[in-house]
Length: 199
Image (tube, rainbow, N blue to C red; front, side, top):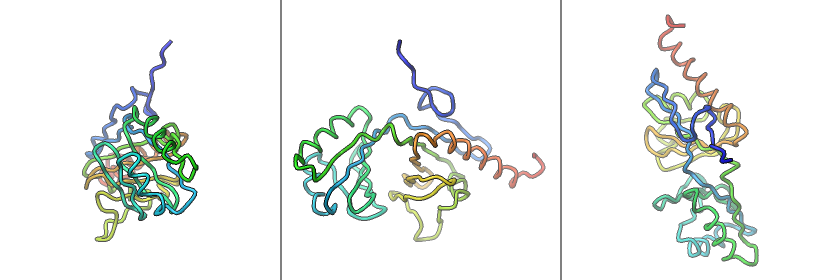
């Protein structure tokens, strides 16, 4: 028997869930594979070797992202990165990284099952995220092409500003259904503020 994956929305995995009242769409991304790359030494000491092993640049500053086609590396800590890749490439990438470091200075672990990635986009997406308590729209706030590790809706999240109106939010898979419900509740709150007579 073949099991069909389902999204936290109860629909086919990867299907978008539009929120027409706020011109916003929430999508559970089924195409993002993820590796957690940990180093036993400071990241600067192994970044060049890592890049040579998989031909992907590994950034060395918090909030920075290195993009290459369908791959994306996010600096997490002085000794770790989160590496996005197509789901079908995660095993091969992990193997390449681990084989490049037989001394175990660096280890890559599959992380796709741990993190659920949502895409939130639309003209009011920033307003929704601001209700979670992290988004700054100031000049030095979170610009497109950068990310932030933060608490959003009371849970730990990795928030990437992909484009001006498009955000990627990574949360623990066990918290994914809660996050989706929180977004829907935030939409209702915003709608009631915008159209108080519709409550």
